[in-house]
Length: 136
Length: 483
View (spheres, helix red, strand yellow):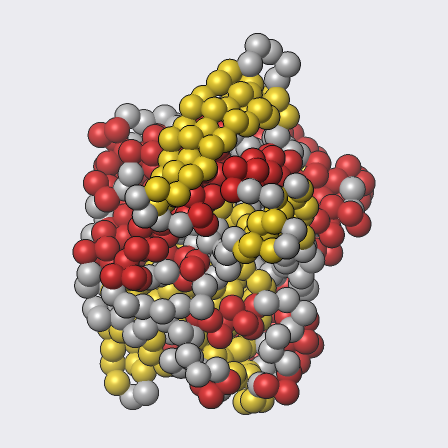
């Protein structure tokens, strides 16, 4: 289970591998926060519950990360504890997420958006694999 | 990967990827670049992305790529594509998340020599008056009804509120207001983000830069614009902030379903699109225009804040501290325009992503004082290097849908830049060259280091030789504020 930044001329690209869907989303979130240089304040933690759906796993991944970006900007909140359940039911992928985190103390960079550029979650012998490109 | 031998050389500054290169291409790709610049971009995916862009339904003429091109997401940065109106498509990803990201240039009568002792305090005043950085709120906060007016009226709102002069509005692309903007087509989340960001610079490659007019190449055009050698000028580079990012994100998601409904097959999901005359296409166009008007207001309020900073730092110390607007241009935008294509006059939707409108002399869209010289085009360089003022030409109208380049264009990844440059060392180097720097983040500064960009002079020389813009003046930076 891991993420790593890979080369992209203008924006940021993140390669993520994970054994299952829930950990793929978790690693992608951790990677996105790391790219932005997000630092959490050492104060009592805050929590959020998210319920999201999308027609495909790629769409669910983008929605989840977009939600985290929105919470960063609108509430100044970021998360480092993830309890995620991902399931496919009724022709859609569903995410139930319990997040624990804290107010943001500082960030190095602003991520404008999570893009769909060449986005595809592949099943490989090592688990799920994807590359995300962020507009910065 | 596309190789140089796949390209047809048209001239020293023009190359073509023929339609036969890939079976799903609907039009050829025309690249404005020298051989050297072209060799540079074969190392990333710019050309592959241009070929992907050439698969959009309803394209006319050619997909064009400017010499500052670099790899983006979906559509290459520096790309221009025109689709037939109303049955062609509109693609939010071919305009970008930062809708109406653009540059404003303010000119002055302030001689560099008389302002030089006060430049450091001017940089501090700009930093204090112009909110910048990650998560920083704007100079103005508005309620929902006011946000609606901003999105409908654009720069006219700023004029009514005292943030703009009539000259500012007149000398803004489209008069700072796109018709057909509908704020009801933007989501509550986009509205929420926009309400607190009016008059904010943001972070990334956005900046406010004080320059000195270093050299004049077209004395008459420079005089018309009020640019004098040795005088100060100011560039403001930013866009529609979180409101625009949210509009694009919302519609790229919605359009994932639209392409299935309209049976459109694309090589990249970021290129999703919808017919211009479909409900989805019309809604996005109205929302994009609302975001574009928001961006015009954002740059206008920042211009107001810049004037306050100049007053604070220079009033009583220089003879005339006032700043006049030269022009304000967009470089991420979709516009419905008339162009001649293969001998026919067609109404088209021109997608410009990292490309600037560059209308030639005589264009009715220009303010009367610029109709004789052509539209001013502002090309910001990388930090510490020159920037340029150009004008559009008759050739740009014929060969590039009235478009030209938008900047230096990245050549090095942000990761590589951070590895090879330290932000604090870069600031010291710039300061030692007399450039006063205010930056929110040192790693952020390192990512924007000059070596991460192409040589802007070479980019400008290329569009000039290709005939799709003409040089007017070169600017040299003396103070920079970055988020």
